[in-house]
Image (cartoon, rainbow, N blue to C red):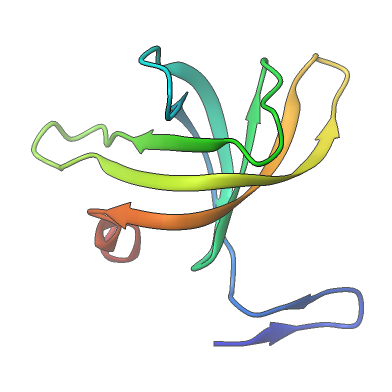
Length: 108
């Protein structure tokens, strides 16, 4: 699906999430909290209190409030810093490389 307007051209529609999730750098074991602002078929925008180097490969885990739901896993590459807000939060645009259980985003 192609969504376009006068100010932006996008290949895929974005789904606003604004949900707390977890991420980790692929080479590290520690999970860190962040907020997933939105997701599309090709990328995600997340906000975190830590700086993440560009081109880092990260694993993002989205857990449901329902314990019966499988967590969604997204492997993504950080491709741009989307900004810094006044709360020392860093925004990152990430390109999705692979997903697991991502059909739950569409069905829920």
